[in-house]
Image 1 (tube, rainbow, N blue to C red):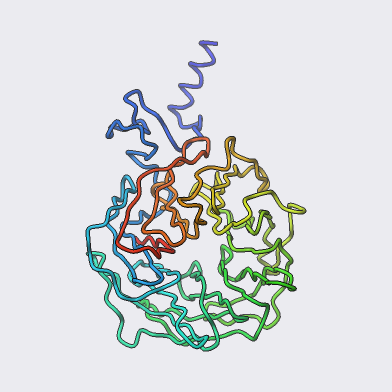
Image 2 (spheres, rainbow, N blue to C red):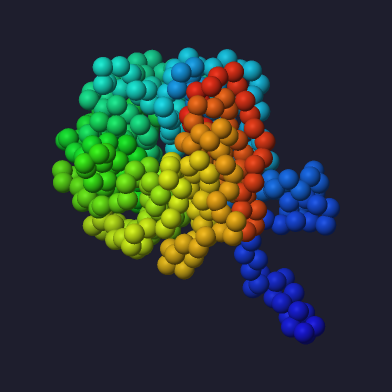
Length: 383
């Protein structure tokens, strides 16, 4: 036994023994082996960096506007420093690849939505770009996604269209391109890993099937004319692509379905017949930066461990965290540099919450950041 242990120690020193977990608890009660605050609060004091750190945060309110928040890039904690909000209501937002532009989706009026373009300043304040408003014609915008190369903003609509807008080298928005009429509410877009496919979840609605629309798309935002349509459980709202780009997970009303992605054909192959059970009001699906865990938000959080071949195993104790006042958690995101935190935005709340993820994928409630509003719907992180 001692000889075996000695061998593993030697191999570890030679980097041949791999420690799989991303969270550590040191003898002083810290959340990792580094010197830290000693709180053992579930937030890594010395983060395991998986991607670019998000240094800025914006709380999006559908009525009052956008509130800049202070974000600690190491611990991930959020605070509100009473910066005045940008008086631009929005339903969701996205940032360009460089993190210098913030794009806001506003439902507007008369069934015509808009996208607004803001410069993100070094002090987290926002400056509107001259001529920054893009009218979306017959699109009432819902959610947006940016392709991996950062050249296209795709906007899902609660009307039967999908919109793409080319992003210039300096982050400014170009011509609006609107798809032919399709589906009922293709509101939730996500790009494939290469960016050559755009998958859009269409809610369907009463009397209509819910589908994933699978488009081919080029770097200028031109969509294929006849997207593949793959039927999915009702109410598909949460879409998450694993880091390998091989598996797409779609969360709907009470069911989570996994698909294998065929990028060559921009098609999806169902992997879980009938889906895996989740809460009845699923909203967002998020995969942690290491690709280990998948979280589905609704009035609570369902947690799954991603196994070989994209399989899903329920995390013991799931579901976690009943949402405040029973409101569904409509916004959820993560910082690649702080893999132990889920940033959660309950519907019609006055702020955002931190969900703390332990090494086994269980989620507990962390701190809250509050502002003087009650219509928060989204939290946007930016580098």
